[in-house]
Amino acid sequence: MLCTNIALALLFYAWQPMGGRIWHIQDPVEQGLLYGQFAAGWGLILMATFLINHFDLFGMRQVWLYLRKQEYTPLPFKTPALYRQVRHPLYVGWLLAFWATPTMTVAHLVFSVTTTIYILMSIQSEEKDLVAFHGEAYKDYQERVPKIIPRLFRGSFMGKPQAPRTMAT
Image 1 (cartoon, helix red, strand yellow):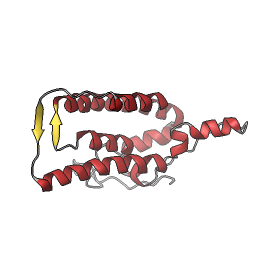
Image 2 (cartoon, helix red, strand yellow; image 1 turned 45 degrees about the horizontal axis):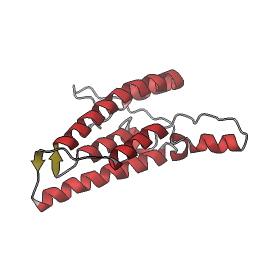
Image 3 (cartoon, helix red, strand yellow; image 1 turned 120 degrees about the vertical axis):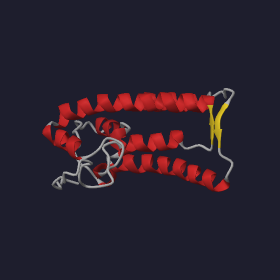
């Protein structure tokens, strides 16, 4: 995680624009909506990290325990707030932030497409690890909660209602 964040920070720092515009929204209301979506994406990222333990996610809890000469203990599987709507709200936030722009340049498009592919591939790998670690609890969670696009209705789209299930928060 740390290496990914460092690489992303370096990418932002060394960014060089490429020519060409894909789209350019000039209407101030539409621009405001896109900037709002951009801000919502970053807000979602921040909120999601704290819901699942920000310090453990970024390795700070592990370092703190090591410095205190305590053994690392994995956190229990929980589905707080946003994690009841989608399994990967962190990734949803990244996607919102990367795609919400009033001016889409070729470089931004390449960046957005590449990071979207990376995120979709990461979800597959991450979910294999989560199933291996949490077992049936995570498999049940996968059946009930969509990956990145929240369901608008409780039942399935085929008209079969699903019985509501609860999980520890």
